[in-house]
Image (cartoon, rainbow, N blue to C red):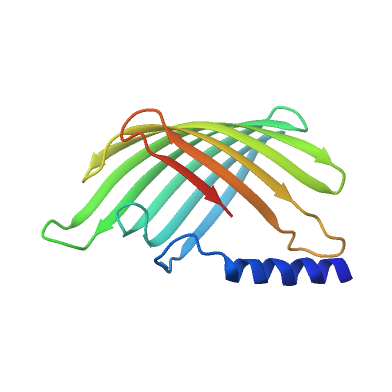
Length: 178
């Protein structure tokens, strides 16, 4: 119990001290998912996501997502994802709804650490602009995640780091940590 309290206090204090950007953007990200399990080891997720002012353009967006995940074994799974983005441009002279689609393929490997969990996800995705600004691009994604499981506690914290690197398009590189 004492270790758990020290961890929580330390995490909160560290979060207040972290300054990654010079500008603070308040955003809301929501997601609602319905899961269908048509067969053992196969999940089909249908999701709706709303993200307030964010992304490269700084505009609200509605995302419709279909993801199919196949659990190959206890520690290995594959998934494909299709997303349709509706980006609401209400700034400037040209306003309207911009459209994009994205396809992604992932392979996820889970590692047994006793009570704790560690996973690596490797993926490739391709984004196509249907209307509005931006460019088509393909990205490689590598994500590591560690979950610390505490006894008798529902909200186990997960720490992750994800690298995204474009292989065409604007050749951007991004690192997400959370």
